[in-house]
Image (cartoon, rainbow, N blue to C red; front, side, top):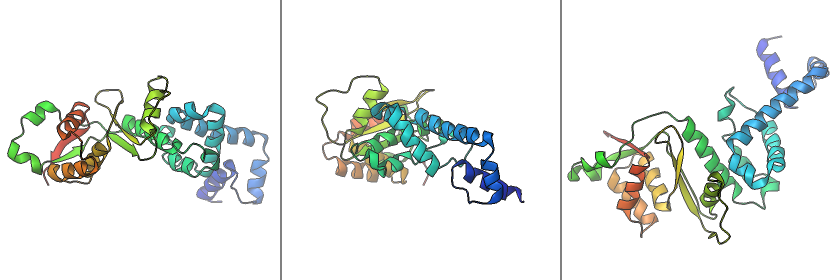
Amino acid sequence: MQLSVFQDGFSAALLGHAAPTPWLQALQAQPGFAVYRNTVIKACIDALQASYPTVCQLVGEDWFRAAAAVHARAHPPRDGRLMDYGAGFADFLAGFAPAVALPYLPAVARLDRCWTECHLAADAPAVDRSWWAHQRPEDLASLRLRPHPAARWAWCDEHPAYALWQHHRDRAPVPQALSWEGDGGLLTRPGAAVAWHALPRAGCVFLNACAAGLALEAAATQALAAGPHTDFAQLLGTLLDSGALCHPTNT
C-alpha cells in the first residue's frame, strides 16, 4: 500500500468519511482509534473556540462547541498550525440552520477572524501624521497608499456587528438602547497588541480602494460617495494614528 493511500484513508476515517474497505474497518475497530478520533476533533473545536471567542460568548459554550464539531467534520484542517484554522467559519455559520435566528453572528465571526489575521500578519512600518505632514501638496492626489499588512476592516450593512463584537471584546455590557443599524470596525496592530476602532462605511470603502491600488484622489472620491457627510481629514487622521496605512507604491 502506498503511504499516501494510507494517509488519505486514515484522515478520512478520523472524520467518519472513510470508504468501507477491510483495512480501514480493521483500523477503526481498534479500541484506541475512537480515542484518537475524539482527540483530533476536540483539538479542532478547541482551536475554533480560541479563535472565535466573541461568537462563543454570544451563543454559549455548549452551542458553540456543538456547531464547531459540525464544522470540524465538514472542514478538517489542511495545515498543522491550528491557530490559523477556521478561516471559513463565518461562511459556515451563514449557512448553519441553528444560527438562522442570529443573523448577525456571521458578521461577528468575521471580526473575530479579522483579529486572528491581524495578530498573525507580517510586520511593516506604518506611515503617521509626521510622515504625512512632510509630503508635498502637489503630490498628494497621486499617492497610492497601501493598507498595512496587519490592518483588517469589515462593514456590516444590516446589523451593529462591530458594536456587539467590541463590547464583548472589551468585556463591557451591551447597551440596552443599542442602535440596530449597520456599522464597521478597523483592527490594527501598531505595537505588539491588536487594537480596534469603529470605522464608518466611507473608511471601509477607502481602505478597499487603497487595497485595489487606487490613487488617493480616486480612493477619497469613492469614500465620499459612500459617505457624503464624512469628514475626510478626520478619517485620514484616524487611519494614520491607528497604523492602518503603509508607504505608497511607486506605480
